[in-house]
Image (tube, rainbow, N blue to C red; front, side):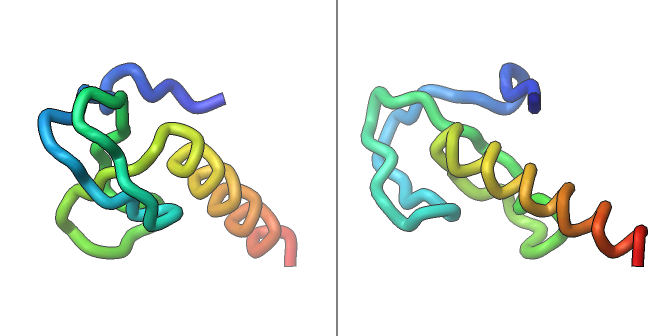
Length: 68
């Protein structure tokens, strides 16, 4: 399980989740992080579940590539 405590914030304004594209509303908790596995250098907003799912998928893909 990924520890999101050091990258989780409370939104002061609306953001668009970089994972699912839905709105992160003001007052909602969200993850502010760089896209896992590279991507844009700027940090993006994610719902906690979206970030966790994306990070786990990237970890699985990387493990699969090492086994090939």
